[in-house]
Amino acid sequence: DVKVTQSSRYLVKRTGEKVFLECVQDMDHENMFWYRQDPGLGLRLIYFSYDVKMKEKGDIPEGYSVSREKKERFSLILESASTNQTSMYLCASSLAGGSAGELFFGEGSRLTVL
Amino acid sequence: RKEVEQDPGPFNVPEGATVAFNCTYSNSASQSFFWYRQDCRKEPKLLMSVYSSGNEDGRFTAQLNRASQYISLLIRDSKLSDSATYLCVVSEQTGANNLFFGTGTRLTVIP
Image (cartoon, rainbow over all chains, first blue to last red; front, side, top):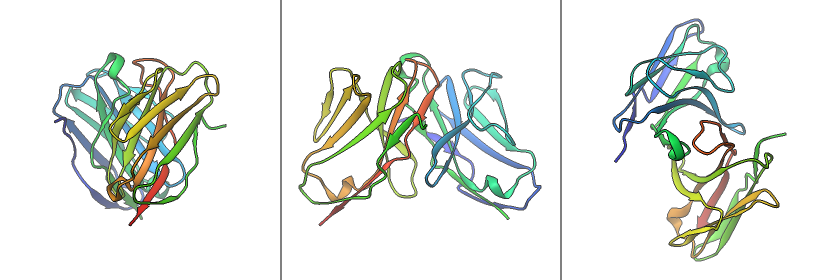
């Protein structure tokens, strides 16, 4: 089975802190994604990557950056956390091509910014 | 206007009932369609892709209506374990990364 692992299930940070969220997938998927999920808003794409060192902005990239130095790992960085970044963060991966819509998600990282 | 819209529910149905959800999408050029299931406090998981000709997987049937721009999910003989939120996902290009998620329809199956 495909496994997508997120490093932290629950984090509590203070405003202004730098936050790293790590995601690792073990199925050699080309595509990796970071979403946030908020009640009533559904999943919104922050960034995605279709190859090592490649990244594309999603719908809400402001306040976030990403890093993909290795194919299996995709990191989300909040340079200076703010309270409006309190959310559930979901990492996902998929194969390139026709299966790109078949996403495999990690268990999520629930971030609270105080 | 949202790209993908779903009735949030909740749909509360007795065990054994048949229940159907619809999901409308705004872009007529959309190419790929999916239903995901998300249990409470868990990650979304792919339930099924939706093909132009419709498809069935056990008690679940998905259909696409391009003329009216909606997809549907029918669940027959509902089980308690079907209780979850069902997310509609639409892609504007086959194989692309432009996926639009609905906010989900919550289903509770009651004993």
